[in-house]
Every structure is written in structure tokens, then in C-alpha cells.
Length: 102
Image 1 (cartoon, rainbow, N blue to C red):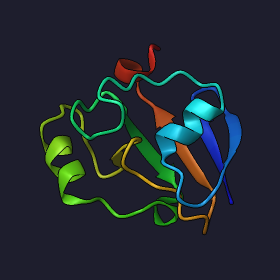
Image 2 (image 1 turned 90 degrees about the vertical axis):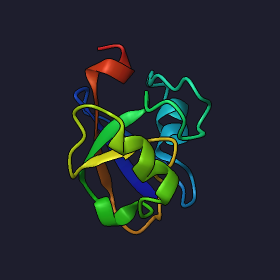
Image 3 (image 1 turned 60 degrees about the vertical axis):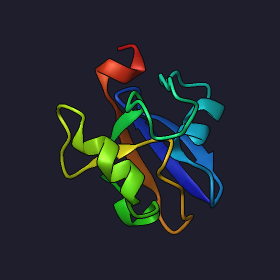
């Protein structure tokens, strides 16, 4: 199990191994836009993983292709619908204004 800290609110939630960051965030009652229901098609669940990047799954081809088409992507960028919690370390994510309703 890992603790996920969600910025900018600072809320901390628990997530079990194998859960996507999107599912964990939504289960923690935090709003995060996700227009394609977790299929790496839209990019609206784009987040930054600031800490614990080794605690989430590696970027797969589909996710990488979608990230390549999004403005503002950096080395910490992930799609919350594709990044799975490995349960090895705690994670700190930042919800971005575009997808999070901020």
C-alpha cells in the first residue's frame, strides 16, 4: 500500500498495489477530469508525479504517444488513468488546472 499526497490541496489518500492513480484519486473523493474513461485517449487526466516516480508503473507506448500530443508535458508528466501504483513507495502528485477544474 502507498500513500498518495495530492497537491495543491495536500490531501493524503491510501492506494493499494495495482490501482491506477486515477482510480485512487477518485476513490479519495477528489475531482479529476477523465473524458475517455481511462483509455489513454484524451489526456484530460494529465498530472505531474513530483515524488515517488519509482512507485508507479513505467510509461507504456500508448501513454507516451498521448503525452507527446499534450501541451505542457514534462519529465514528471503522467496520465493518471495509466500510471499504476506499485506499492513500493509513497507518491506526491499535482493535479493540473486544465484537467482538475482548478
